[in-house]
Image 1 (cartoon, helix red, strand yellow):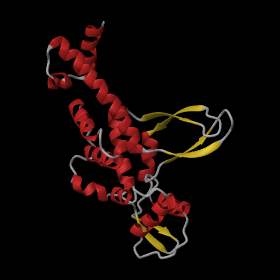
Image 2 (image 1 turned 90 degrees about the vertical axis):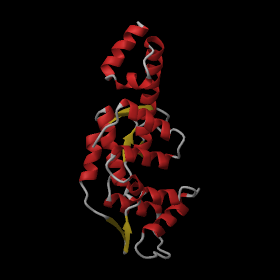
Image 3 (image 1 turned 60 degrees about the horizontal axis):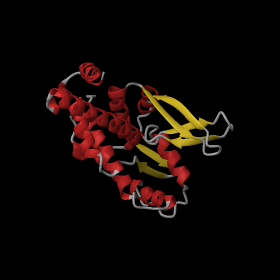
Image 4 (image 1 turned 90 degrees about the horizontal axis):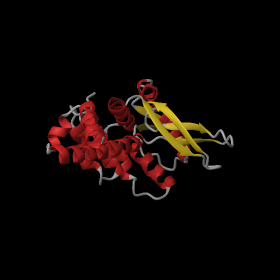
Length: 231
């Protein structure tokens, strides 16, 4: 697993800032596994993608993932931290390549599969079309619910759709919330890239250095120069 230096991080941000979230996730995936064929990544299982992005996130920002969410019942703001290592244990805990839904055998969904149903406005319709794509044989009128499909896929690949079990300390309401790994990582990269651009702007204006020269400095040296510029 390689990480992104300052220049590569800004280049990744520049390419991804106007892309669809699914395309942006693939861009991050390619950055996480630079030695692999980027054209093949759209056909990799989502669990493998999420695991690679968690590893990239850990290399860039550390193990702790800080987040917050509002209770859907009372609006209380909950702050909490997750562990990238703990989430990655889910990826290491399974070795399945297919899921089983009753008598229907399913391959694990990929980014390309999600893209095929992205335009669906109804969850039930999206789930039905996804089931048709994933099944080894046409499932016909299976009668499976969205929840049953989700449980079958989660059982086969626990890193595919990470869900958090939350409880509000103010009203004791308990609920589950999805954790979108690509979206979380992109938000952090967006913040870091904009901060780096601010640093380049301040140092270039003062010292007349090029962007490449500034980004080639270690973070500690950039901060030291910035303290002198802003102090």
